Amino acid sequence: MDDKHDEYKRIVFVTVGTTSFDSLVKTVDSKQVKEALSAKGYTHLVIQMGRGSYIPKKSSGEDGSLVVDYFTFSSSIADYLRSASLVISHAGSGSIFETLRLAKPLIVVVNEDLMDNHQSELAEELAERKHLFCARPQTLCEVIKSLNLDIIVPYEPGDANPVAKLINKHLGFPVD
Amino acid sequence: MAVSVSIFLVTLLVVRIVYVISQSSKPNRNSSQKHLSTLVVLGSGGHTAEMINLLSVMQKDWYAPRYYIAAATDNMSLQKARVFEDILDDKGADGTQFMQIYRSREVGQSYITSVGTTLLALGHALWLMVKIRPHVILCNGPGTCIPICAIAFIFKVLGIRWSYIFYVESIARVKRLSLSGLLLYKLHMADQLFVQWPQLQKQYPRARYVGRLM
Image (cartoon, rainbow over all chains, first blue to last red; front, top):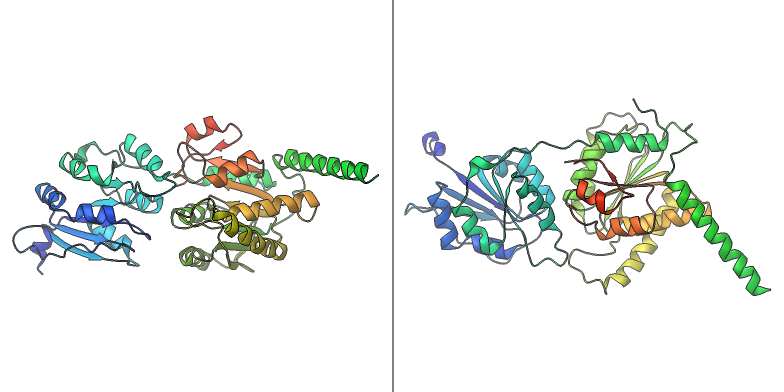
């Protein structure tokens, strides 16, 4: 593959983390979502499908459509995130903050099948602050169609020092 | 006779529990120690990332030796802790240990079957706590920390070991405390309970808002 071709690569990376999230994989593998991504100028779709049982269809994109590839797990998720122009992720805080720290546009899809569905809290709060976009599997296509990356507010990483200082103080260690 | 003895013992226990709770929220007055053995309870994925973030700004030679505990079903967290410990210089890294514990509840497990698995986790936690008897316990959310903190509290009541328990609610909790956080809060088991969102602190006034860790 020549470099010239690489310049036009705009990769969408989908990640479900350590569990399974078939309804997300199924949704991104649908004709509507793939067409919506193509219409937005994305050229490649890479899906990390975890323990899911739904297998997406691979495509080499010869007919001008999206190039689709998938894998189950990888030790170098960070590399996939770095290479992506858009990340579509499950609502796990690990994936969310790893993506935000790389300053990649992010759509978080909330898994409504989880028993204790607290995960939507974080995604919705961060969406309200315009750090990311929040969707459900059934609304993902609409969110992609109306995607406007210009409104994203860059995420400022937090700081653990205040907690550490309070703990030091409580234990009687010197606090500077 | 037996009745009055048991009334006396129960009263004594209640007084002791009230004393332990009231003392727990107060700072350590006996600050002569140079370092305190620290038990770090790790959870899966995001929880571990948050805990490592906190540990990376803490004085390693004060919080030593460190004992890391993670669920037996979780291979990733201890691995991450090992990587974290490996890149530290030797200062205060002596005696660091990594241990696994039975989990009281898996993600998605029903609350009813959780009862049996919680008992098993409790027994295992007791065994580990008898061995470690930490001065400081750091935890941030996984159910694994509940048996540990409950035993630590009982050790405090019985005078076996006075542990300082710090709980940092996960950044994923914006509106409500997790089950672990809620239990520790309601039962007054944590010396300090930190939250990362201001709206959460408003709901739980005894919690301390510390801003985002991530």
